[in-house]
Image (tube, rainbow over the protein chains, first blue to last red):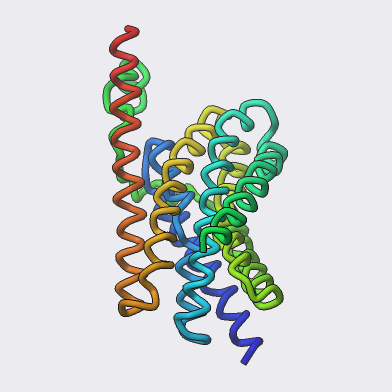
Length: 115
Length: 148
């Protein structure tokens, strides 16, 4: 049961990420295609599997946490706009994870306070 | 084909989305395999954190920038640096749509049929992202016109 649950998470997550990557690849210009790089692919994959295995209540909680993560994602992308100009690809992408983590956690704490 | 025209005349069609399914042939299988592994791994990590903490904090990883991590790296290798930062502009707009989408789903998932909540949530992401893109294109074009 648990193994099937995590296997389903892996397959669904991988599939939707690739699906949106394919859609992104088919569009020009790059700044339009970039929208699909921030598609809620893992969110949808993850929620579908959680709903099927555990019901809507835990899925709803995950979606709530994802609001915080998405706020961090905005910070990540904004930081990446100028970070990739200064550091090479992988290094820049990793450095941009710092604002992602800080903003995600801050948004999470605010959201939990409001709840 | 259209590249030389757009280079000579950067303002024209600079922002208009073009659908080019043929581009998909240029993509390599290895790139997609990396993205698949990334997406799958992040999903499992988010689920594990959720299972251990029993709190919605696992949801943070659901929005982990896995795909931009992969795509920015890939772009940077193959094309120029400028393209990578353009990609990040779109990603920032898409991420704002993501917030709206997650908000909607978290408040409706237990109130309406799950498929409707997820479907409308995805639609909200698309509408907000595209709306912001149109606004961004308009603002940048007007500024160029003003300067030039």
